[in-house]
Image (cartoon, rainbow, N blue to C red; front, side, top):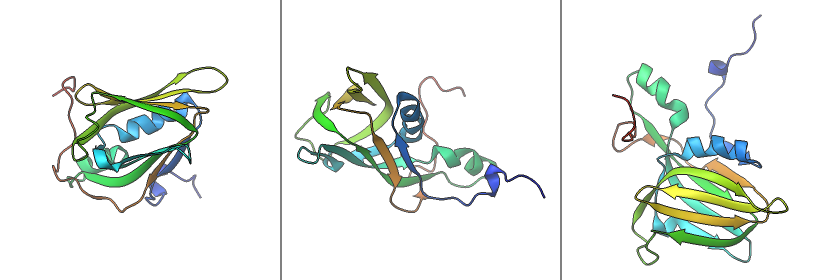
Length: 161
């Protein structure tokens, strides 16, 4: 009998929670290059919740797709920030709900008493800054993976090759 290996696990939808900056770094890597239309961003003031329904590239599957010469995948996911006190945006047209946005990174800047700011860096110099009383971010896949429409892996200007 041998130890279990990561490869032995069945693929499951992601459901991750970030309660500190290191956890958020993991989620940030998984949602890099996620795309979403502006109308899929919601801030419920009374529930103190900020959410985005996004189409994320499945970075956790990219190496397997490459090795098996199969199409890359995306999956619809919900990204939720809890305990939200305020939301601000820069470079994101408020009236253009059909504008497609793309996440480059998510970071946490601590404030006082456990609070701070969850900052979304978007492609095209856009940004969303979410003030939170405490850091709690959840990423949950809500559909089965589907073939990425581009059939390719996202690339950035600083990528090799």
